[in-house]
Image 1 (cartoon, rainbow, N blue to C red):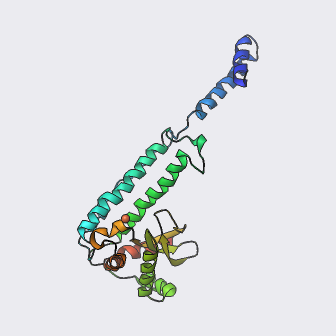
Image 2: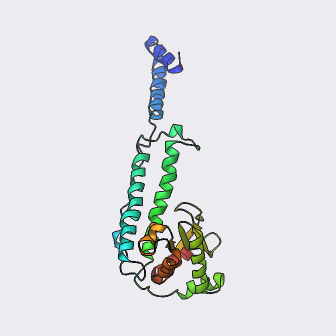
Image 3: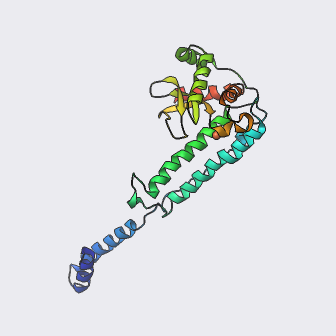
Length: 247
Ligand SMILES: [Fe+2]
């Protein structure tokens, strides 16, 4: 006989005693707790869904065709949005039993890992499309140019560093501002959620997945990166830097 069964019996048998009310209160409390524990999922979690940002789709880029952008934006980027939303629904349901969370394998772990992959896929793609405009726009602000020259010697050196990182890595290369040590650095990612430095803000975001250039370049990444640099929207990049240094 477990404690709950004992209390149920004693609660009934002592119905006329002064202890009965106390016993039943304990029983009700334990039943409420048991009911809560029996809910394996996150049914009380708020589901926040993302919407694709269609206004970010660039057109008329130099060296990166509209056809390439179309498949990149509609299939790949929107695919991450859809999967992120699907994961949020599952996290808020009884699908993944938190009591069975396990670092080797568990459904809950799988959702948390892929939540990271898809969310970062959404954010990095939006930053990528946002920092592109046909033929490029503007130039590095005085403040950003000074910071780049302090860390890399020149803007060209900085872009060369981004290019080398983009060739060396499998997913992304960024020029980022490290808010922790107040400095610029180039960050390479092998996947959306792999090797990104925490506490940093991406300023220039370069997608080097093959899906970013296979329509135009097949497997040739360097000419795609050269084309990417011709379309940088420095107004957007300068604004990111301004916000990062003030944060
Ligand atoms: Fe991409």
